[in-house]
Length: 141
Image 1 (cartoon, rainbow, N blue to C red):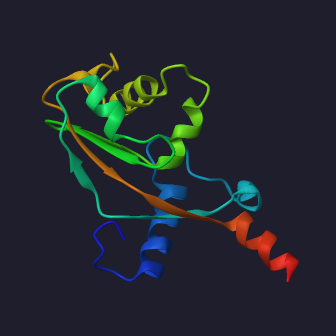
Image 2 (tube, rainbow, N blue to C red):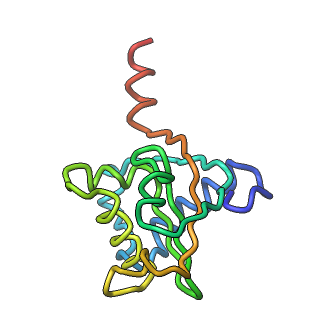
Image 3 (cartoon, helix red, strand yellow):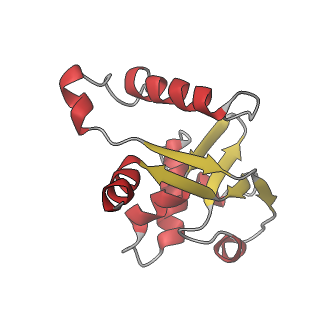
């Protein structure tokens, strides 16, 4: 669970239902789409705040493909899981592209919130379990 106060199975069920039916970024999943869905569950470590004063500090402290990032500044807040780095793998400045996108997700249309000295960062790791990984390993047995 996001809070860690409810059983994991309950949190997975609730999150799956919410993702499929109440995510404001997407229309609800239609019945015909269900067979094409792949469920994945990411188990997150506790977040750790990082101190920074320069963009280079961020580059040193945030490891692509390892760290997920929570960005917050006032009422703006957004989170990217570590696997989101995959979308920026070919970018010559992946850190800037990742953090700019995270800023936009937090509601900053300019994508520059990540450079604001008032922006706070927390990092975490995640272990992701995918339905397809389980099905592949089950078939091998």
